[in-house]
Length: 505
Image (tube, rainbow, N blue to C red; front, side, top):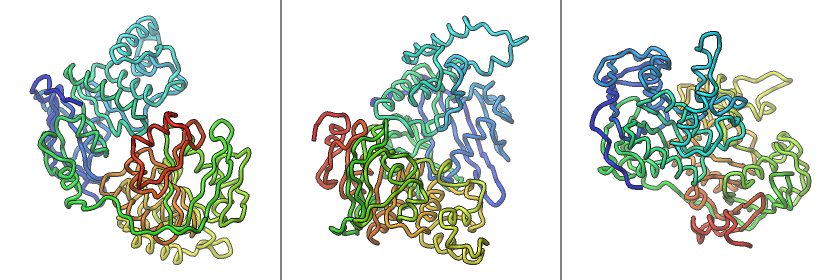
């Protein structure tokens, strides 16, 4: 995608010497960051580098400890989100701030609904203004339509529309493509191009470096709360950005030391989940990584949940080492030697306010209890062992898991399942929302687990990840298996053709 020069070379925002500390953590240490009108400025770094803290200071969620913020050349204090909005700064979070049971236009003008005298609102005016913004963004959706009826991509465009309706000069996009299809990503990029041409400043926060190389004008890299550098994207390569982020070159992203055997461990035959999956069959061998992929909603995530007993199955059989097992709940799956890393670790994989140690014990309490009482010494010993084994970076096992980086949180989820001593590990989007350095570590752990003889069933929306991690790949289309492919001989194009119904088996 060709990038245009910024519409005008003027600073909308300048942040100078920003510092912020939390108990025991220096989150930001003298960081400088500026934003120019009509540019896309990428803000990158590993989880815990300070990106979120910096954006939260700019949007008024946190207050800075020291430093200066200038808006259009004037020093300002941003003490709360309303201050930021009045200054023309809006953020679009990875988890949308929309109210599903309200209409598109009501969500766009939510701030105004509670501010009108006596609660009087002109829906005619609101509808007209909403139509104008939606048409400009190219979203063919009625302003009266409920947000709950929209796709993820459409909901994201409504978030952008809400920001534009408030005449935002700076729009911060936090992991904007995390849940989008390829077509929705292209559409988002088109909207960003139009915003840039209109003179809006976009702060683009993402772990997907290929997107940054395609859309950003400049890149700022943070590491451990410090500014590493700001450069034009045209002056950087992907490897140079990675080196700046992690402080060392990543010699090899993908490793493959395992040698799968011919021994069949898992067999799924004619599995059907009403409305989601139809007659899916697959096999997985000892020490093998088996990928499942397809378009969003093709059923690959549902297959994992059905095998784990989290979705009701109307027909089909599951065999572990040739023996048919009855899995009607996750506890049945755990007893059968199966664990599941869900795609949403914060809502389904962890209890964020609780400790690393407690989260690691969640699925295996029977191993650390005696007569119904937790043996804390044994629980701590188990947690310490996994911290060392998985290289989990935490001050202690008593640390609340919500304060760990995304990559370390994912390792805690993995430790939780390893504690159950599973033979089969189902992984749904295991690297979603984690940085490139943490991804390399997760890839290494997946290879090590397979080398130990464990079976990995892997679902990922990133095709390079699926191809490079898997031994075999099942491609799904509309709830069915469209193809079984050798990962060493296939390509993204071939997978894409099967995944869109272009080929038949």
